[in-house]
Amino acid sequence: MLSSELAVQTRGLTKRYGEKLALDGVDLSVPRGSVHGLLGPNGAGKTTTVRILATLTRADAGEAVVAGYDVRNQPREVRASIGLVGQQTAVDDLLSARQNLTIFGRLFRLDKATARRRADELLELFGLADAAKRSPKTFSGGMRRRLDLAASMILAPNVLFLDEPTTGLDPAGRREVWKTVRDLAEQGTTVLLTTHYLDEADKLCDRISVIDEGRNFIEDTPAGLKRRIGDERLEIAADDSAVLAQVAQIAGRVAGAEVTVVEGSLSVPVARGVRALTEAAAEIRQQGLEITDIGLRRPTLDEAFLHLTSRTEQEAAR
Amino acid sequence: MSVNDQTSQQRRSYALLPSGPVSRFTWAMKDCWTIVMQELTHLVRQPSTFAWQLGMPVVMVLMFVYVFGSAMDVTGQGAGEGYVDYAMPGMFAMTMAFGFMNTAFVVTLNKEKGFMDRFRSMPMSPSAVVTGRGVSDIIQAGVDLAVIAGVALVIGWRSGGSLAASMLAFGLLLWLRLALIFVGIYLGLLIKNTEVAGSLFAVAFPLGFISSVFAPPEMMPGWLGAIAAWNPVSSTANAIRELFETPGAGVGEASYWIDGHAIAGAIVWPVVIMAIFVPLAVRQFRNLSK
Ligand SMILES: Nc1ncnc2c1ncn2[C@@H]1O[C@H](COP(=O)(O)OP(=O)(O)OP(=O)(O)O)[C@@H](O)[C@H]1O
Ligand SMILES: [Mg+2]
Image 1 (cartoon, helix red, strand yellow):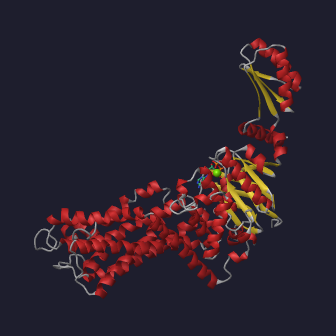
Image 2: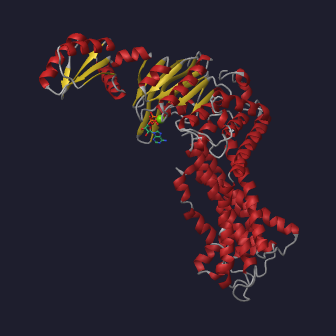
Image 3: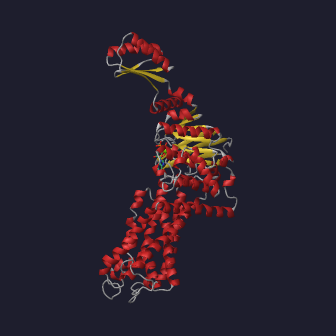
């Protein structure tokens, strides 16, 4: 029996679609009231995990407890406790925004008047009051997403699943969604969200599980994860190879690390990025060296995955 | 103001779940009704969809009656004679028969758009998604029939039968539609996306046309005639011809046994269809969680 102190707990979740092993033993522990991120590339198994937890799909093997209820044996109790915002927005384009929320309110057992009142409250809260009578068809992607979020919060769920809540949104839209998620978490809702974006996981999550090929192989805080992924890198480009060699010396000294030079540009890991950048820039200028580009770069998610997976393989081999 | 203010102040609780078979049933009915209201609101907000849907049978009525009808001799009294009376019951039956495409399309659309997932992740009655669909389809079918009957009256069709017989005829039409709703739900759940749902015409056309809808099966080559005669749509079409006392219906000796038992066929065929497709639809619905 899994613990019910946790909002979400899974052990060895496995799911096979024909030949494809979509989940290969996912273990999660999400404390109540926290925001937990599932970070992984396309096809990692994020949606499959969320669908199993939201009782939409049955796992082939493994256990999962959500809000204290077993997803396999107590699906109705689980559904009474959760909210789900799927990877696609599920709003009715033939109804107005307000009618959408009213219908969901009715399905959550609110009487007509209460359902309408709740719909108006939520529209207000999500900045959609002016668009209440319009069809979501006329909405921007961000507005649709917000309506979708509102529909999952008719009654604030104990556990909310968000599958890629900000994919396809512009920066402003993403910030709006982030704020909503933070507000919810503050009120005590546990949030499990999936994302492709390291920065999103970083901004929102208390803890992050990195998932790939159906397995979550690392769980850590955002800070811890960044440490594992490796530091920022200072990158400098120059047209002249002699100049580049000189710059490499400077960069190596400033960063105190090994410099790699590839095709007219160099790259070196730096612990304190901004400081290293300014120091290197000052010295390059002092020596009058001609460079074409200088900047700090975080490893991309792809690099991070490569890095993380290879490291866990090494650890496993040991 | 924050997300959890007011209404939702009470955290979610068991109050969202029915506590016994009686409340489970009443909640299922209420949820069903909510879905019906959702579907009917679509019609009110987007009457054009509805108009398109009706457009086809209405155009067919006019086309067959005025274009082909003038060449058809179904009563044995000369081309065009009595064809409106022969074709109208066929049109009614065909409209009901083609309705399953609409059911299937909407079910597939709901699945594709993630609506089904949202419903299934909510503490509502899972069956309401499907029963609500069924009830609203029947209501819509009733409106369809009323509109087509209106057009038919304008172009000169009259029921020769009593009021009771005519009502029974419309009842049999809705009975066929009801059975085909389950076919639609099954296909809608089975089909991957709405593009495929569009190609259901390939199934619907033979079902609608290889029947007694436009011409008596006796006029077709033997094997095709047999298929047409045993088509459930033919039974309903012939049954309502009898009930409307259509001139020429059942003229001459019936070539196929089923022709002589149209009303029985119109009652039994839908039962057979439901006996097959209700379990299939239920299984397919359960398979969603595979
Ligand atoms: N219904 C299905 N039938 C067959 N294969 C499936 C099905 N659902 C998922 N898969 C496969 O399982 C694997 C995991 O898919 P999943 O959707 O969980 O990934 P994901 O992490 O959500 O990816 P994305 O970031 O692209 O949304 C993929 O290889 C996918 O092709
Ligand atoms: Mg996904």
